[in-house]
Length: 98
Image (cartoon, rainbow, N blue to C red):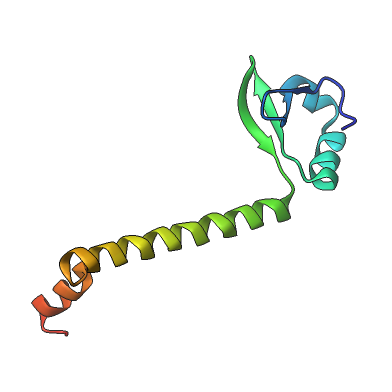
């Protein structure tokens, strides 16, 4: 990483004070895009924002949505195992839609 003023914290992700990022924004964005590692911007030593490659963010969002779908499916299976039906099935029966 060629950004001046970057410090690495325990998890290995680079931290950069906003004041330093402001003066070298081109380098911050280039590094985030080329190295595919997010750069955390800090204010008074606390992480407040992150610069991340747009494609990396899209992939992370896609994976997170997939995990949420898996968790919802697991919860539905657990409900079926526990009740023998889902709340959706009960609602359909109550409204005569089943």
